Amino acid sequence: MPASIRAVRLRILLRLVSVIALGALAIGPGYCQSSTSTVGSATETGFATYLQGLRPRAQALGVSDATFERAIAGLTFNPRVAALDRGNMPTADDAPIPDFEPYRRQHIDASKIARGRAVYEANRALLRGIERDTGVPEEIMVAIFGHETNYGTITGDFDLLRSLATLAYEGRRRALFEPELLSVMVMMQRGVPRERLIGSYAGAFGYPQFLPSVYLRDARDADGDGQPNIWSSQADALASIANYFQRAGWRKGEPWGIAVRLPDGFDRSRIASPIVAPRCKRVFGRHSRWRSMAEWQAMGITPSKGIWPDGKIQATLLEPDGPGKTAYLLTGNYRAILDYNCSNFYALSVGLLADEVRQ
Image (cartoon, rainbow, N blue to C red; front, top):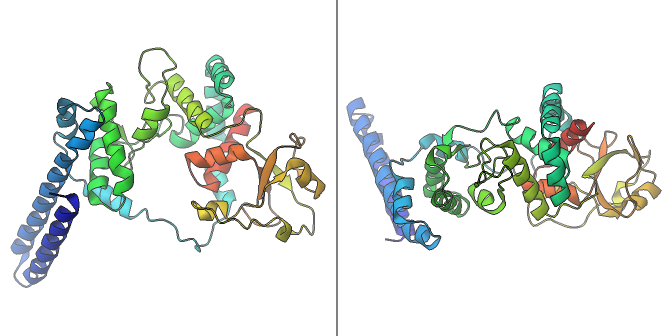
């Protein structure tokens, strides 16, 4: 039976049960308890049927029947995960944007900087080799590691298979989560132990918080044990992060951006971008037109510290806290960070943490 028909029948059943439950308010709590049980039973029945319907797609990806059965064994719908996802609705395009400074203070504190420098020093030989091979700076790898999981201390405690199965079945974002559920099965087929499949409620896991499809595409074995282990191997996690950024288009030798000061009376209308981004409109809508560093310098903009990068490097201007506060010129490498997480606050804090780690 097609999933769409099953979903319609399930919705009809749930509406019917809701009507019965309303009537039960006048009868007593025992009747309500029975209705709740009916809803739970209907959900679990539909959930199990949905999972079995994924078998042909899993087989097409090379997942054996034995692995498929092991993956879905004992899985139940997780109402908590569904509620968390429904509470994570997209922000309206016209919603107010808070200041960046409080976010920066929270995510780039003395402890995180100190721990980042410790990770940096402990892995210098490894990091140098990865940067040589990929062009991705050592400090960027460390900053992602720190920002995503506080250097491996906060990685999530949700069962990935149960969470992704719940989110795929629930349907609001099935196009995202169903392929990720199938990707976890592929991971199992390739030898990833079932007990490692723990992470966030939305399916991200390991030190860099990769989704399963990203793990299959970008995870690397840097310590030579035969399998990419981003759960407990810093070497594998750092190499995997670098591989992600290399694929995302990181340009060797370019900074992610620089903090700058604008001259008094700067005419922002001259550099406003007319382009409407097809995705992440709230993020890219705050960026100016692209101009070379030399052109920005000619407009009277000055670095907050240090010297200008190569004048040919293209950059956009962002004022996260508005006019009169610290502004940033952001290169194409900043866009690679946005590819990891499409948030200006996230990408700025990664870049600034990386700068602190390198000092």
